[in-house]
Length: 102
Image (cartoon, rainbow, N blue to C red; front, side, top):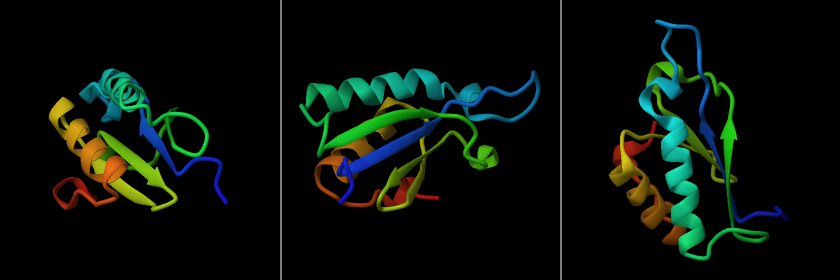
């Protein structure tokens, strides 16, 4: 059994000037926002949900990206509204957000 119910990795990779990367789209700020939303709901900690910063996840052309394990669900996101939807639908209710899935 996994230590966490869901483990989320958010790509915050920063490449050289001019190269496509997730952090160019504000993924670091949205990572912090997602962590705050999970914590505010009391969903963080062992047996629950863990949000982690990740280096390059190899999908920068589709970025910004995050992946949720153990479901192996990949998402792209643009803003706080997308993060809110991922938290509410996937993290809380266990429903895949099809419009953001990659």
